[in-house]
Image 1 (cartoon, rainbow over the protein chains, first blue to last red):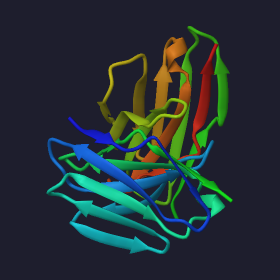
Image 2: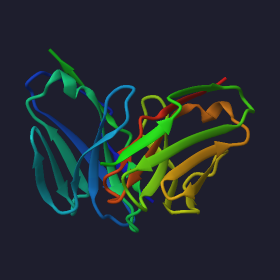
Image 3: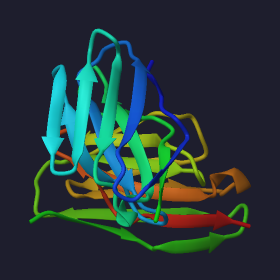
Image 4: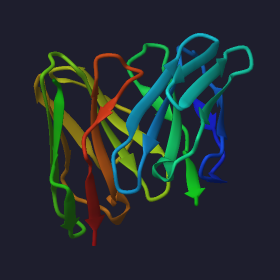
Length: 110
Length: 111
């Protein structure tokens, strides 16, 4: 089976940097995805890491270490609109489905 | 471009009543389709997924069922709703399994 752990909540001020960690235990690992979900809305895809290293997309970056079964999402130059829940997810061995973590609620204060 | 339609947006149903939620996808062929449920303040729980017409995989034993009568149509059903079926139901599609695209969701309250 698959299990993922991420912190439940993080609070930061505008302009700051936030790192959301995700550790996972899987029977077969093929990659780590990140999603953003605003209150009342649907999740939207942010990034995907299949190989070790850092992937940068604008203000958001995602990192993966397969040997440590660990990844993180880095949110830079925080804006009020970044207040949302962020989920990590792993692909299963067959590659047909994702298992999601419980989510990290990020609250950005002025 | 691809779009996903999910309806209704909100639904209030009495215990013991049936349920049918529909999801359709446009602009893509042979997508993988998914039904998730999300309890308030929690993560997404995969309920069913389908890799093709008539092919349904169930992830969690429960009071629900799913069907895929057409390539781009996915239906979530129940014969008799329970209070515990309340939640936010999300349909999603993918052609690359790490990138699910979600519908706008249905907030179901069973009373």
